[in-house]
Amino acid sequence: MVASLRAIVLAALGCRMLGTSPLLSFDSPSADALPADDAFWRLYDFSFPSSEREPRSVILESLRNGVGFAIRVRDGACTVGLAIVHMLREPPVLFLVYLAISPELRSRHIGTDLFEKVWAEGAERYRELGRRPVGIVWEVDIPELAPGEQEIRQSRRRIAFFTRLGAQILSGPYFQPPVNGIASVPMLLMFRPAPGSPIPDNSGFRALIRGIYFEKYHEANRIPLPVVEDLRREIETRLNLPSRG
Ligand SMILES: CC(C)(COP(=O)(O)OP(=O)(O)OC[C@H]1O[C@@H](n2cnc3c(N)ncnc32)[C@H](O)[C@@H]1OP(=O)(O)O)[C@@H](O)C(=O)NCCC(=O)NCCS
Image (cartoon, rainbow, N blue to C red; front, side):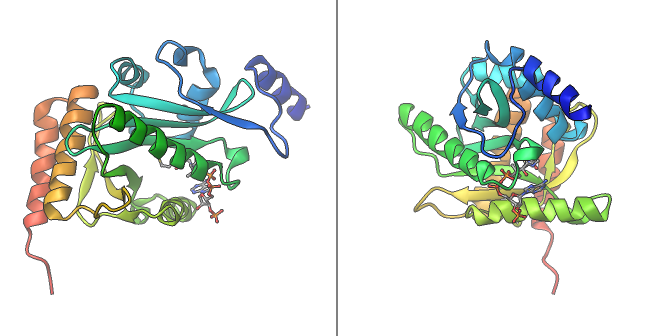
């Protein structure tokens, strides 16, 4: 009964029942196509807590003005994976804002393939602008701050997934600005350098924070300048604390 109801809902969305070996494709939707993709938005809402979800209008606007792009994983006409990316100008680093795979398809290497698609597509877009990206960055939750045992395990699995992709956690402090307009969230930044590029040093880390805060969260998300300035100052203060021991 429950399974057949699910089949009806999926069919209404243009989705098959996801079975053993779906035939998947990747595409990069336009800002005009995305609003009507219900499966995309359901996966987005399901995969991220409301405190970490930015308004849909911010995502669509970044696609429209070319500072961002999205990649979908599709099973026929049904979206089963998504990535949303912002291309920083300075430093030229891809900021992977969201990455998610439908729960029933996880642990089949699809997330890994999607991550590599994001990198290839982003590098191509920078090349078209006459630039070369020096890496890709994203935010992850701090496992120790997760509310329960299961969330802690999940958070560690997520970090393990990205570590296998060749990334590492940057050692500086970080806060995600209030994307839902309410509160900032202490998080970690992970980074994978382009082949031949280094992991950011102290000044590279500061440049990355400036790019993320001003180009992404202030210019694209329209978070007021004093809010991102305060967070940046807080990070500076913590970076300048004498290290213990
Ligand atoms: C992280 C995620 C994109 C990985 O996609 P995937 O298709 O399962 O990835 P792969 O099959 O290539 O790799 C599997 C690994 O992903 C991680 N993973 C899978 N499911 C996970 C989950 N529910 N939570 C956290 N990590 C998970 C694990 O490290 C897993 O390896 P393991 O099974 O040996 O523990 C996917 O789990 C997801 O959508 N999670 C929810 C959203 C999210 O946390 N996004 C990342 C931050 S933007």
